[in-house]
Length: 283
Image 1 (cartoon, rainbow, N blue to C red):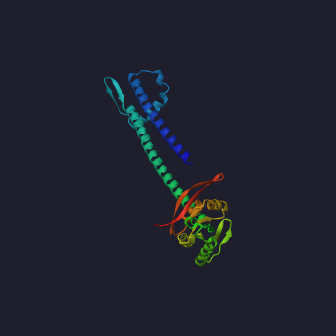
Image 2: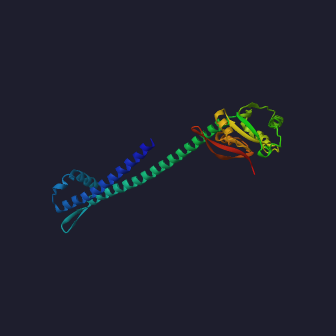
Image 3: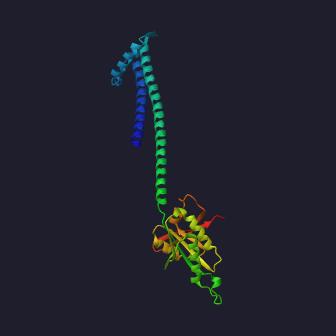
């Protein structure tokens, strides 16, 4: 519809321009017609326009019928009146063209404002839908893998990894009242409220920074993408709390952010890639 209206304005401008050209042409022809009548000649090429010019001059004569004689030639003001009528018509066409431009500019401005308003409303609705959709994702999984720190792997130092794992499990249970599921992926904890993950992260960072003789690789994944979680675990980012891009993106929609996120890198697995991020404490 917008294109049709713009095309309509183009047609109007073209029509007005054409009528102005016709008006100028008629003024020129009328001048020749006037000269022909003064000389009492008969130019055949003017015969095509004589009926229209005669009616125009007769109409002008009703407005001004004065005439005077100069050196034997009769000068009739009706011709001047006819030319003035064409000039007035020409000026009206220019004025109409000017107002058409104003109306077109007003329409374009109104359409632009309408389009922007609609775009803003659409973006707002889209943003609200995305926010609502993201906030509806609340389930997340935390998987912890452990290994003895390199400096404690000397044969003269006997570190019981199982015992250290039990100490970690007891600490997390004391803080979060939750037991892990032990699987080949590691110690897996399932939570149901991602909006409160900061409280869980507080505990996890305490685990990470503990003086225990073991290292921790902590992975977090929202939703049920276990394949992505397994790839994340396989990267073995010890000393970090890592997550994929979707988990990091979901964190943006929490109302509060006690921690920041940063990208570690992009890794290939199969025909897919995984963008890995980490939680970090504000410095």
